[in-house]
Length: 336
Image 1 (cartoon, rainbow, N blue to C red):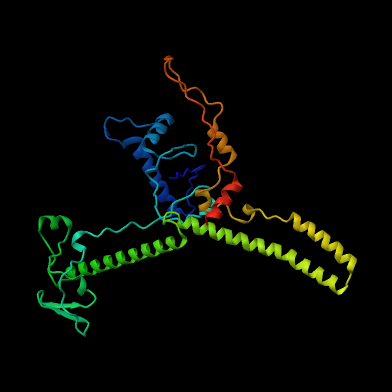
Image 2 (cartoon, rainbow, N blue to C red):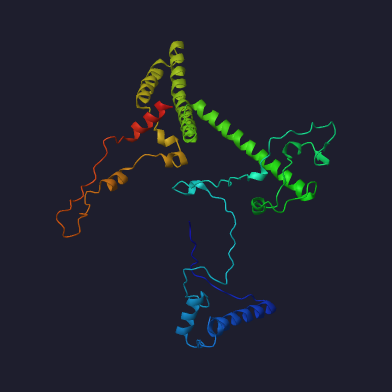
């Protein structure tokens, strides 16, 4: 998805004498290998003595030996470590899908068969009559009389299988239990997610979008209530002073000014809400620049041939159902 480029690459040797000698020897050995004897046909390749041949040979083998070199390919003598890096989503202007764990597929021989099992005893283990050994009570529901094969290929061939009661056999039963528990947890999570979507009156595909929009609306309402409460508290204070006869002219002037502030009071929705959130980027408003690009008034003719029978493509028009930013927000909130 991304590609890294190294600019102004500088190589240097350490000041320690022993390490400096070893680094210098390794560098000279690598230069001799690239410029003299590396290749498929060693006997037919002539050694590179001038700088042009050395640069050509270094580009062929992706080898850096001068600061002025630039190679837009992975370097052979540089180690790459592929590790996980935490992604800071607000730093990107486009949605990045989260990393989801791969779904585990249970193969056929790992599925517990529905058979009549012995009744567990009061102890930790229960004696299995047909298998002839003790089995832990937590593993007993997952034990079957069918053989557990060592691999899927052996299962198809009906070949090698684990000996009942061995360590490998118990390990396979434990793995079967783990997979069954994970499958049950996953089904429970899906059921709870579906119940949440049903509670909000939407589907599981738009549940996160619906919850995020409701959370933004609640945050906006709280902010609006906090700001307008300051004005209402001041008006109540001035009115109480007038009722008590304190500073009548001054309180009347303040009330008139406060009524003007009430008339001008307005809080923009997008000034409170973080529009960089993922639910705004996925289903955001279409900007005027994007609409202008979609219109394409100076679109060239797509009839580039000499065949005059072909029709000329028409200029793309605006859609009739385009809404403004305020209309889109109001319609979304009304649906919620």
